Image (cartoon, rainbow, N blue to C red; front, side, top):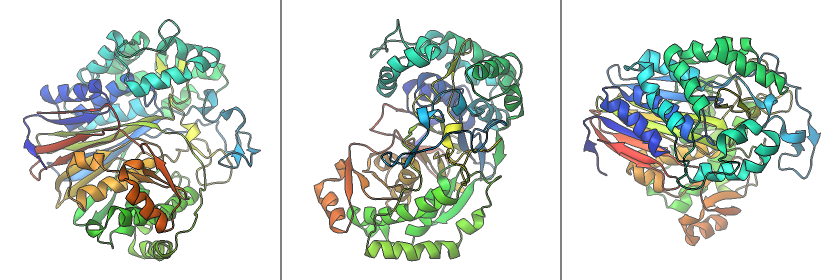
Length: 533
């Protein structure tokens, strides 16, 4: 492991422009929050498949070295006031993975899938309360990328190409913004979004209010309602991101923090509590993945049956992470280890497209930030005159009525983002996170164990083979584990589905106790970048 002393700090993100935007803030005298916010705004321009300025939401953890504490900023979407749990038609579909379907998938794509976008509110709140540079400076890299152009990476080029013909038929403004002369961009070709540059300039000058009130808000609401959606000016005006306390557990002498519900990190913490009684460092990879499989099958059923917006669902977080509840789950775990069962998927969800950014400055402050459109290109609706492609916050609810995560007016959906921070004795240790839909909480389990049990570098944690289950067999396992491990899992009673890659690109930074030495890593499954000096 190679922790090196830093003059400015470290920024890791999924696109070189993203990492550079953040690092420029450190050079300018900003802190880890300035770097994260600048990187996140830039990421919202240069990776439009994964997230955007009108992405449905995100969540952020901030470790403050001076006070040795961690705070969370929640900027999850909220459903419009006119939304209701029976707003979508549900058809029985025994041939579908979920056993039902919404005709036309209108809960996922199109105007009815759009909730209040939270990204601008969350990033502006973080900048105002915890940043040290003017918002106009922090937004400068994003504005430049929108106005003068950026080269989409492979994942985004592929996403644009895969959706191009549909956009031409159903979403003409999105086609106009992201196609060049009606064709997807080729490698190295530059895309610009001058309308988005103007929107960002308004936010740089007026902050939160410039986006959620006034002319931009009216343009957004009018267009979405013309298309048949229910988002209103009042929905936008009344939306707020908020500062809150993260969820926390003690694990192997570390304090592990994650964002609160609707985020996915509670499931990661429950799984960590379950596996802590085992000597993971002394296990083979086969034994460890066998344990992970059974922990995942237990905790995902809990998550998908009972979790939802805490303002609408009665849930006691202290109880969820308590010794007594962990003991109850542990009995199920032991039974599963002795005789693995098929399990079940409570609610099928194929969507996966998100971005993660980690930053650390030379003073010892750290940020872990994840934000998203939802699935690729979110709702696929772009509002003319704004350059804004909207996420699909309503699409993150279960469309069926009567469930913990059913749609409800002003309700915030359950989602999978789960950034993590870890400290030891109040001092910084690591910031890490990853995109990938339901694979996020499980990959965060794997990273946590790699960093804290196996004591590997940030890069080694990201390089390691991955494993996934959201409740049922077959278990997804990256083929890079090798045939011996795959066969060993089969012999233990698991049905295995080999995979070329599970989640990503993830990013992580390990930090020395005094905060001045960093070890950053970026996922080999993506095209991200570490900038550190």
